[in-house]
Length: 108
Length: 115
View 1 (cartoon, each protein chain N blue to C red):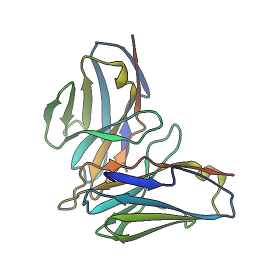
View 2 (tube, rainbow over the protein chains, first blue to last red):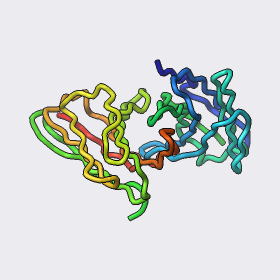
View 3 (cartoon, rainbow over the protein chains, first blue to last red):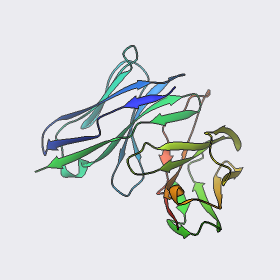
View 4 (cartoon, each protein chain N blue to C red):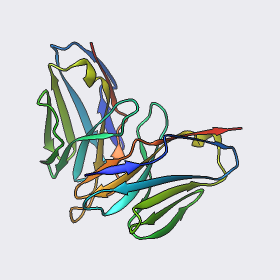
């Protein structure tokens, strides 16, 4: 079966660093996606990890360990506009399975 | 128009109505998707089309009927819906290669309310 686990909610302070974890168990896994979704809006693509290791893209970085079925999204220098839901998704054969998302609240 | 567009943005319909949702992608992608997003639940994949051919039907009730006339357009025909079908319906597209799924680009969604 397909199973994605990530925390439901997190709170962090403006300017700080936050790490959002995700564990997955899926069949036919070929990569791990992270999406950002602001309230009332569509998800937007943040990152895609195929190989183990850390991928950095500006203030956002994403890590993958295929052997452990584990990923995290790291957000640095948090800004108020980063308040959103962050969706972890496992890519498989012609489809993607999404987690429930982690709602991040950035406070002053 | 750029990206993925969806119409209508909001729809209220009775249980006996028939309506259709429309999605169009302007990205030259070869795959299109319908998702349902309900509160407190993960995005639920409904249908996948690759090169206009349906490759996934995730046990969706027959009151939802998809149509993909070409790689740029996707429809979701609705009839005799139930109140629990009220949700945000998202369309997405991606450029898939060698059966692997790559990043998806989402439309703004249709907020559906069934009364």
